[in-house]
Length: 157
Image 1 (cartoon, rainbow, N blue to C red):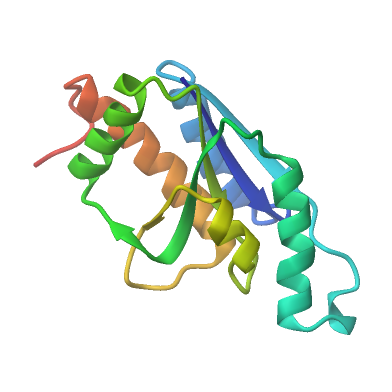
Image 2 (spheres, rainbow, N blue to C red):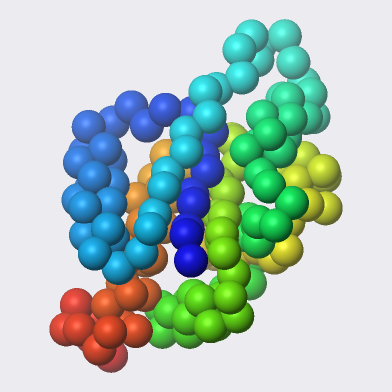
């Protein structure tokens, strides 16, 4: 299985980039993982929130294949503990999913077309985080999931 994380907009803060890179380096020992960064939509000052989400959706949909299993990282999504999330990842692997794609939306969330294309959604917390920080939190949780599946000492219950 391959896991892809798609996000909109470049990560600018060095501490986030360093943290993401740390977990990307660790993840390569467990899974074929790819992170795709879509450039921010230009001239957003002239666009409504809905128009911006529509433009982002067009860019996101171009990244997807028909066979991809798409999971949105969305505040309204299903909540998992780290152990439950590891079981979810394992279920996808056992279920012969070829490419599991997680998507982080832009600052206003997702256009309806992205919700329709998705297979499910996951919430990382009841709190709201910047879409920049979610990248770090997600790659850390994905790494944690694999250490749980391998019974490695990273996660403590």
